Length: 256
Ligand code: ADP
Image 1 (cartoon, helix red, strand yellow):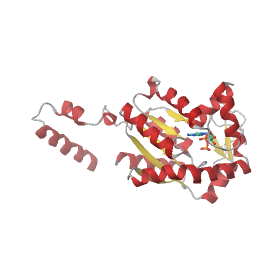
Image 2 (image 1 turned 30 degrees about the horizontal axis):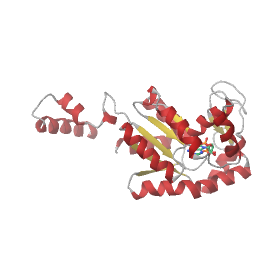
Image 3 (image 1 turned 120 degrees about the vertical axis):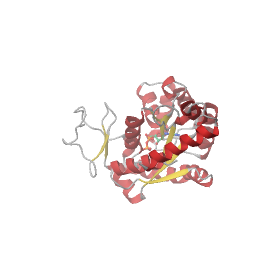
Image 4 (image 1 turned 180 degrees about the horizontal axis):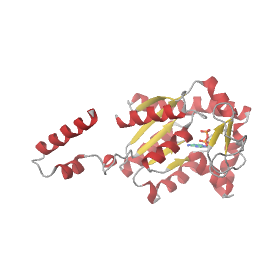
């Protein structure tokens, strides 16, 4: 209701300001590119957060709601590994060790994916940037594309992350993720969607998890501080049920 009346007064304001050329076309001219169209589009949404914070789950909810693709750098890399490409073979060593894949391998894979037509209206970025250098190159890339990003940080206390990661199980067919402690499948170890036997990712083993969390602190924290310093970081409480997290993301995106 309140939003509706704000819309009406915005339309009146634009009509007066533009000499009544027709409110709809005036709105189209004055609206930034990423909010044009019958429905509000969110353009690029960057989901940041430590490993296990639920970025994939929230990406899935966003894609269902806003029909923009999920670009998960972890999935892009795993796909290369599965297909046995040269890049995949090189990336695999780093991934198995819980280390970041170097930008010389990561960036071309990402840029290639983002240049595909389904990304033209926007996309959800899950797992990138993970370093200050990646945050800076992402800014440059998105500036070229004219797609300003919304930066969302999912915050989850470290002690909880450990359980979230050790308990995580993935469906190798549809990529849906579960947690044996917090979000078990209806039938033990089987995907609710397609009945496939769930698996544990090789990097969800304890010693690798510790390394991934350390890497996050050391490498990704500076990227987060970079966005925070510029007043671009939107913090969301990731330590609540997934539907609540999704609600908080939606309301914060809507108010941006
Ligand atoms: P998680 O966020 O749970 O660690 P991901 O699927 O996002 O899992 O990533 C898995 C692995 O892929 C990472 O540990 C890292 O080795 C590699 N990776 C993913 N995204 C990036 C990135 N932006 N830069 C470098 N390496 C990456």
